[in-house]
Amino acid sequence: MSELTNKEIDKKGCCDIIEINGLNKWYGDFHALKSIDLKVKEGEIIVVCGPSGSGKSTLIRCVNFLEKFQEGSIIVDGTELTDDVKKIRQIRSEVSMVFQHFNLFPHLNIIDNLTLAPIWVHNKTKQKAREKALQLLDRVGIKDQANKYPNQLSGGQQQRVAIARALCTSPKIMLFDEPTSALDPEMISEVLDVMVDLAKEGITMVCVTHEMGFAKKVADRIIFMDEGQIVEENDSDAFFDNPESDRLRLFLDQILSQ
Amino acid sequence: MAIYPLKETKSPPQSQIKAVVWLKENLFSSALNIALTFVALYLIYLLLPPILNWTIFNANFDLAADNQSCGREGACWAFINSNLKMFIYGFYPQEELWRVNTMFGIIVALVVFGSLIKESQYRAHYIIGSFLIYPVIAFFLLHGGLGLEVVETDKWGGLTLTVVVAAVGIVASFPLGILFALGRQSEMRIVKFISVIYIEFVRGVPLITILFMASVVLPLFFSAGMDFDKLLRALIGITLFQTAYIAEVIRGGLQAIPKGQYEAADASGLSFMQKTVLIILPQALKISIPNIVGSFIALFKDTTLVLIIGLFDMLAIVGAATSNSSWLGREAEGYVFVAMVIWVILYSMSRYSKKLETRFSTEHK
Image 1: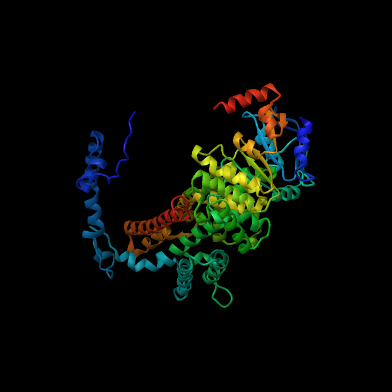
Image 2: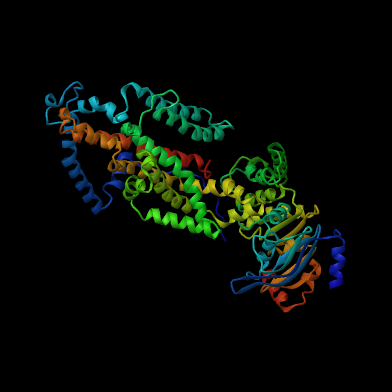
């Protein structure tokens, strides 16, 4: 299995862009992440799945320090995450995140949502930020909504705006935290289509999702987590065809029998 | 199996005469409601005629009348007319009244100009600039100096004083309130501790106590030469008081902002200041508008308390004017007039708050 994985990874870039070593996190007494080791190569598409409460969201939220952790280290693009605010901001300017509940800024219209970080964090001119924003909105198929406010859009449109907002800063890494879980069923595919498109472009993606079809289609590697640890990881074909652990088999049975 | 064809959309049924429907729904919907309607009608029957008689039908509108010729069966509105200057300007010197008028005139001009440049990209600069520069101009005009004759603050009074006290309280407490609200939310223990202590202490004390402290106790700490202005002390007291309330109102707004907004702002790499100013505060303040304005309205009414430390706001002028021997016993006219003026001001504030809410609403644009 490990040989296969390595071969698969070798197709991608040379270097680890995310390096997680011995990561431990507790919420009070609750051990949420147990000694996680994970390396992500540049350009790799990783899908993280597992039952709810297994620590998948917590794991990717540690990568941009939305969650603090107590032990271990995370190195993102050569910079180690510490309490140092400057380093955190530097990493956050290279890592974008798409949230389950979109988290668009409701008091700003769509175009201002997109240009905020480029203007204030990346010091782009208003003009340039706007051009890029419109280009990205076009790409996710909602250019005509640029002057509306988030609450006027459907869930699927909002999530596509959120993806465009995440892309606006030209990030090296995109983190997706269950991007389709809050959507009505008929809107899931419009968001997944955008994500599939994105995956083809070679941006590094780490997605927490239950969309196994998406995982099969684009993931280089799939990671299965349960009870705060990585139980199994494999390339996408082997992951579905030959699950090794009982827990993964049970999980796949449950999720694919729907 | 059954297949149903798509149905046509129809317009809703037209109801009968609208007024009748309204009466039925609002006044006669239940036995209790019918009873209350008749009680209310009876109360109106009892109260309204005497009020109308006193203020209008039996009142003397002859503005040149004096206390004797007016009669006692109705209001004597000549009292308001002959004391109007005192109601508006207090004891401000006659020949300097143009300065007060200019001060009010500039406000009107600023507001009108501001509404004309609604679409301009410099509107924010204009508003902030006005807030910074206008108080200096207003102080110079009212107080004097630099060639203008100095008018000491004990001559200020009436509506002018009411507006000055309320405006200073409002304008100064707003930014301070934001700071204390943020302070109370802060992760820095000391900042949070100081904010909590301040807010809880001030909110636990009535305004009267703070005004007494400011006017009676505070001077005890200063040597005789350092005694500073009574009005200034009242202004500081009122600002400190109002700050605590505004801080709590804004904290309520801050707490209503979902965690996701903080996370999205953090994740995009915004600094703490950027996050606060660009993302959190605009939303928190928007939610808080009704409560902020409510708090300002309460403050405006509370300004009448400066009476007890010897300042003559508009309400206190009633007492001063009726103690003049030629207008003895005309308190009622004075209080009704002051009530009307304050009501007009406060109702405008309340309407303006409604307008702001609609303008900032991003729900159905």
